[in-house]
Amino acid sequence: MHKEKIRIGTLVSCGNKIPEYIKQILPHGFESFSVTFWQELGDVDLADLAKRVKEALGDSGAVISSLSVFGNPLEHREIDERTRDGWRKAIDAAHLFGCDIVTGFAGRLIDKPIDESMSRYVEVFEPLAKQAADKGVRLAFENCDMGGDWKRGDWNIAQTPAAWDMMFNALPMENIGLQWEPCHQMVKLIDPIPQLRKYIKKVFSVHGKDATVLQDVVKEHGIIGPHQFAYHRTPGFGDSNWTDIITILRQGGYTGSIDIEGWHDPVYRGELEMMGQVHALNYLKKCRGGAWVPNPEV
Image (tube, rainbow, N blue to C red; front, side, top):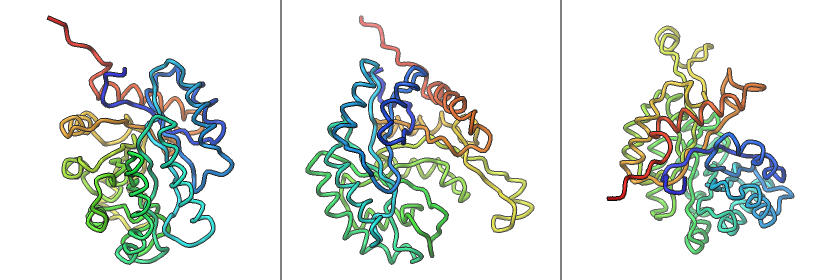
């Protein structure tokens, strides 16, 4: 497995119980784990967690692909400062987990147009990116809109190509990129394939999440009516051709993980959650070409 440049894993987000959770699902064949936190680290000691995670992984060959803190690091509330503190601590602790990627939302000035958040984005992330560069760490922004649009929203400016271009131009640093997934583009009716080709060099991390777009609903009711026209799916149940996605990743020189982001599928949830995730795991491995096979030595 250590020869495979693209691993298939999943997100784990249960705080101090992450090592125990990893032990339970590791036998299913997950090759990587993205350690995630919502808004803040809370009472988690990252050094201690890293030690216990390493013990949980044992000699499996699985790795930690990234550390993530999903909050709004641009606003000025107490919780937002805890989010920023989480970013700083995750950057410093990434090496303890054996990874070099820290991810999350880019944040947003609440209910302001995306362009009005750019100066604050530079103010917050320029020092974080410099701190990360000193540690050999890359920063990747998830592309979820969190219910927002260009004019208003609560969480994240890094949601469309136009915003990415503004962000990369405002901070033209090599260690700033994307945590990309097709789902968040598809629900905007954006074709993710040409987008991935264009931004491949800025894709540092990939979330394994798909979408289903109900074209009949779009044609009959449009996208602003009362009828849901798209929803998130676990890979293997949605519209994306992950063979094409992985092909583009390989052609672009991507090395890293595709970590399944579960808990969104409208069918494979609740008691079917892990069933859906393991299906996605095996499906993505198949789309990748299967297990690593060495060439004969001649």
